[in-house]
Length: 374
Image (spheres, rainbow, N blue to C red):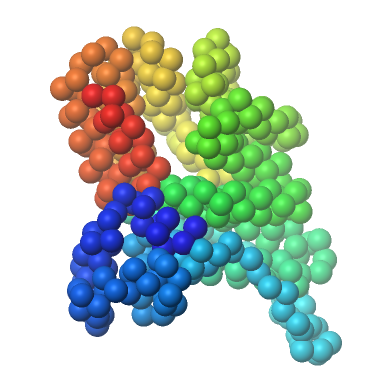
């Protein structure tokens, strides 16, 4: 990826990056070089003439939502570590074997905390925390021996890796997102957790869609629905159908999209509860599905989209800040389809503000694409 790519993914010039670095440093009481020196540093960092020291990496990681490896233009990989003899190996195995239910629950609790922070503030500032969180679980799983110990850890890892992947995708780090989804899928298979496997596959389909392979994305979401469907929860079944509807709309498969929406509505449990008791990463109730249906209908150019979207906006949970950016983008698209340019501009302005607030590269790209149609 590299610093230059991470900067450009934000749509920032070098001067803007320097301004943001200075503002971040001031807000965190950090001493950094002068503006003139930073201009030299940034140029040399981007051209590989100067390594990024930890002082500046600590600023760039949260600003750009990138890891050290990505800032340096490397792909993330973990080198094989030589064990210091059998004693060291057995010590790590014993440590992993001692992980009990309380420690696994701590893994889940940490993931839940990061999920709430991501939902309200965005993913860019969570790179370091999520990287360390995944590393702790991977390490525990590597040295756990018996299935009774491995499966709970693997389940926790599958959920956390899926969240980390979505965060990376939102931050514009596509390769990191793909690798995290692959990690989530492997962990779900190890855990014999088809719900987590299907969910990871369903979200991974969006990477393919965003990369310009919508039909491949449809194939993947349909494969996800065939992963032991008898063990899926009703809410996950509805989520997968709604995701299929959106991906079919992206692939200009109008009839398939509408049928998938009907299946989603039929599968969704009644009531206002949004969390899936069997899988806490799934949020879906009638209000969420209304927004999703409006999004799909807007993509299909259906006039009914407007009513669905305004209904969803009036009932939107204020804690879903990034999702609300998407909702305003959906409304802008629906108004554009009707030639209502002033209304479209108004919603795009709101979408841009919320995308900037959460640092969402993905939503900012969508806002810019829609702005280009005005």
